[in-house]
Image 1 (cartoon, rainbow, N blue to C red):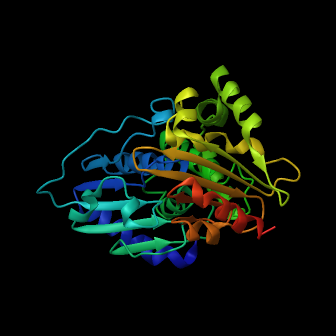
Image 2: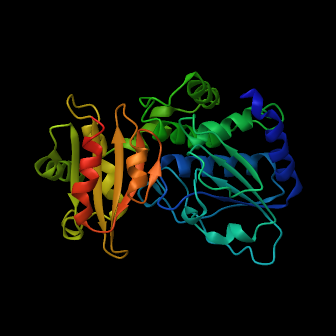
Length: 319
C-alpha cells in the first residue's frame, strides 16, 4: 500500500459505505485500463457490498465485449442520491455518460497528469503505470475485510497489462508488479483468462497488418506513422477507434523511436491520433494538437490532414 494515501483511502471507503447507489464511470472510447479498472471495481464493490446498487456506465468496449468484459446496460439515475466514482479520466469532457454531474458525491481515481478537478475526493498519481494499479492499491488497504475475487482480479490484471504495455513501459515499477501479484494470488489463469482474450487475432488482422506495412511512412528521425482515411477504414472493415489497434507491430523495431496511428472520424470531421514512444516524452506534442496523456502514450486530434506535417515535424524535433 502507498502509505501517504492511507487517509484518503479511508475517506473514499467512508463514501462508499455511505451511499446505497454507486455509479462507476470511465472515459469514452475505453481501452483495457479504463474497462479493466471499471469492471474490476464494480465486481469488488458488488462482492463487498451485496445490498448496494452498483452500476457501471458508458458504452461497451466493443472489440472485447463479451470476450473479456461484460455488456453494460443503460440505467437512469434520475432523482436518486448516488455516489459517482470516476476512473482513468483526466478531464470531465471525456467521461462516458455525463450523469456523474448529478451525483451527490464524486470520487476520482486517475493516473493521468492532472489538468482539472472533477471530484469532491481526488486521488491522482501520474507516476503509476495504470489506473488499475491505483485502485488495487486502495483495495489492498482493506483486503482482509473486503477480499479480491478472481473475477475482479482478472479485470484489474487486464488493465495493468494494457496500460503498462505488458510491463514494457518506463512507468512500470516495483509497485506495478506488487499489484499484479495481488491479482495472481487469487488464482487467475493469466493465459486463459486474460492474454488470449486480449491478444488473440484472426486472419483478417493479418490482412490489415499487411496493408499497414505497405503504407506506413518512416522519417529519418525514426518517427513511423500510418494514416487511415474513411475510405481505407471501410475497405478494411474497421471502425475509427480500431485504427490504433495495430500500432504495436512498430514498437520493437530498431530505428523506430516513435509510432503514430492517424484514423479519420468522418462523423466528427476530424482525425484521431494515437502516439507511442520508446523513451522520449511525447505528451507535450500531443497537447499542441488538442490532446495529451502519458509521457510515452498519448492521444491527439487533427482538424484535417493539413496539420499532419506540423505534427510529424514536432515529433521529429524530439529525436
